[in-house]
Length: 435
Image (cartoon, rainbow, N blue to C red):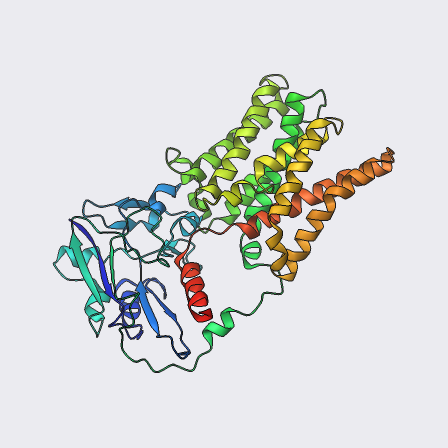
């Protein structure tokens, strides 16, 4: 029998008692059980809806599958448990989970999430959130199979959440007096500065740019007649590894990053990056020991592994056609050194098509809009600078080319949107409000 939760939206008044009980019982951070509420201002003709949600203990948990450190285990009754002593705080599970269940504890550096009060369950006691709910909206559920929720704004994602959701799409429900807070309006304020994802994930962006640069150099050395001093890619790769470790909430457990290479895209990325760094080191210590072609092939595989980390969390075709991918950026850079021939022309045209397809980026924040326009203008300007065929113009074209690749990589992070119930609920409320 699988264990999970049953929630009746028609009974929930959004009091937050279940969230407080979770915090007090388990010592977890606030928000481990989240109360989603839309129409907080009680707009006319729309009802106030609250949804209490924690971990849904899915049949095929994406968090456990993607965790590189194997910090998750799935019990025989379907309960998904996170082990803090194994967690290195990479936060990848927060991308993979569509229900916003795992949350990084910024103070401690590792992930925390609901474990369905398994210690209480062993004694036959319901989870703390269930026993604390004053209206009976939240209940413990145990059955062989949980059917799909079947509501448009609830992302199924094919992982089988152990959740029964009732009356979330009906007009039944208690009358709730609005708090007077303007949370919904605040959420809609336009963002004028740098996007939060870039601010938060700057270390991952720097890691990918360093890896792309080093990989491109090793591919150029392996597949062309141009030789780049092996010390340069070695320094870039060493710096990328250092940055990736600095990104972790618990750097001391960084060694666990490669123990789940079978199912975790992130584990494979770190393994290939480490292998590429070792090859670069051997090329520097003993040139010729490792064939240059081996290093080039490993570099290409490393770039592919970087992209697969993102594709596993955001499976949209739009992201797979994005010219800011690590693999595309690396090959595009390499094509420049083919004397700006046919290969470079083809990749420039592909990049231009990708930019045109992403025209909606110009509707984003001023930062994203300016970044998008710069990327779009950089493509033709590079060819214009090649026309004079002088060393100065060629150098300026190369600088502009690399700046465009960096801008495209930043846009890739801005366009990366893993499925998350926070976004689907927000979109649902916006659509319902418009109607």
